[in-house]
Amino acid sequence: MSKISNSGNGGSSNRTSSTGSTKKASSTPAPKPKTKPSPSKPTGDGTTLSREKGKAGAVPDFSQSFGAKPPATMRQGSKGDNVKQLQEMLNAKGAKLDVDGKYGAKTEQAVKEFQKQQKIESDGIAGKDTMGKLQPQEAASPATQPKADPLEAKPAAADKPTGPGTGKALDLPPGYESLEKLSKSLADKDPRFSTQTPEGRSATALALAIGGTEMYGKGRTATDFFTSKGGTGNNMLGFGQFNQKYHSGKTKTPEKYTKFMGDILTGDARMPNSKPASNHVKALTEAVKSGRIKDGQDLRNFMTQRGFGGSNWQGIDDGWGRNPGLANSLVSFLRQGAS
Image (tube, rainbow, N blue to C red; front, side):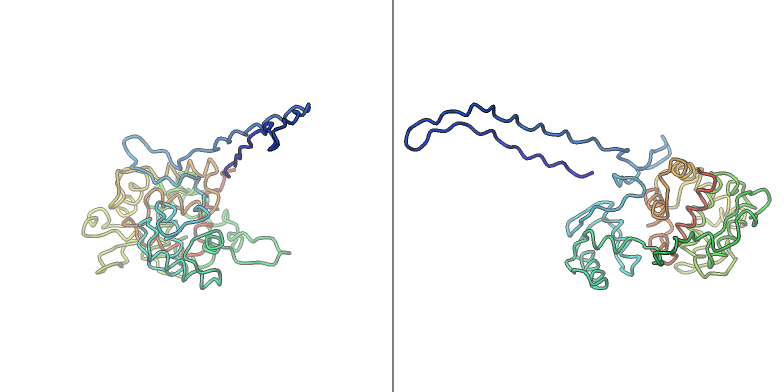
């Protein structure tokens, strides 16, 4: 909301000339002072997510809706969640910043380097031009051609069921076939991942966002979703990269692995290294239904605000940059039947 500038204009008065004679007051009435317009009240809520009593931990407040973008200008000394989002965007472009919400010398230098790459003024200030360049952009297409839907590159989803009774099918762009197979495997093992319901689609989208940024992103063809190893010392297991030092008892079979993931997403278990458990599936379902999740950036903001990333599934922080188009495709999947 833009501020309304109010400049006061004092009324003029009759004055005595320097010669001592008094000028006759004009018979024309003095103009009435202009009425100052009242600032309009902000529309929409000031928070992005409501908390479930007794369950959800504190939610970072971006002070805007899910699709909101950082303010027009940030510079050294700025702090807060908007700076975190800026740091995440820079990391997606190749920077290696700590996402701590503090606009220090390293963040300023990363901004300068990005500005040089983009051939814009290299002043280290994240202004309108810089933020515009950092925002994910769709591939340019001729003005005479309509914008292509990333999901139209394949046959209709209804022709490709993902499992017994799952109904709605997941259909991602070329290169993400492993995630489509993972969706079917999850739905076969746990009804909470059925794509027939809005809640099932929410659980599936969150699980695939985790798996797609950590292990099975674009171009990956492996299907060993529950036993593949990675991470430090090969101690992390499966598509969600659970730490086996702490979670081996809950993830030692594909069925237990799927149940543990489902429990975390629905609030029956606590997210690793997180605050109290929260029903992320319910929150995402409501956000999609209300129209707050319109595109991939909204989904990314939602997951950041719910605590996905950082010490919980660290690959999410920069994994979106390695998987262009995945977030938008997951939102198209989420919005099936929403309108």
